[in-house]
Length: 271
Image (cartoon, rainbow, N blue to C red; front, side, top):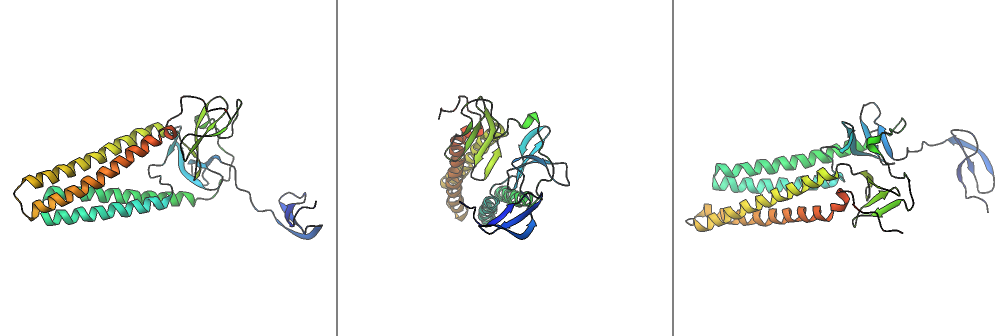
């Protein structure tokens, strides 16, 4: 059976010829460049060594001999923008409460929330900028600190195995690697343990903010009733609910992603 019509390699390096489904034609063209396979590459024009997933640059690079995510890594970038807007709205609400109550102490939280909003937006912008960098132009960097890589095999039953509902991890046949298969593509997970600890700390800090809001609401309820105490109660309850829910979500999500952030201690089930 004849191959379908299309551009094919006809034996001339760097050139392709049109096959009309029956025979070769006289039409030729320069072969389009092929994207490098996934791996660690030096970013053209810089000294950075970043992870290329075969399609785009990712916000992961080798720093001080270890693969690490960028400080402002946000995937997908749109998530950073959405969270930035959410924290901006919360900051405006808290600022309104501070203006109404005229309490100097209440102006601290809007500043914190606004700072968080700015960080999320900057993270989204940074990740978009990384994705737009030119494709790799040199050979992949092979170093012990980034090995074993996805695709390396040193035993039977090598392959990707699910570790959570949304991520899989590469098993070489004898050991787990730090690389995860995600909906965004293969990603380095070397910073998983530190990320796990950070997420737990952030989750409990957010819960702490919820507790502060609850304390403010209780204090307002036992004080002499006035417009100020009324706002203390309302906004205290709002912050207790919002940050309590957010903190619980972060802690539960971190727990659910434990196997993706930390190396499994047992081999995968045999296929």
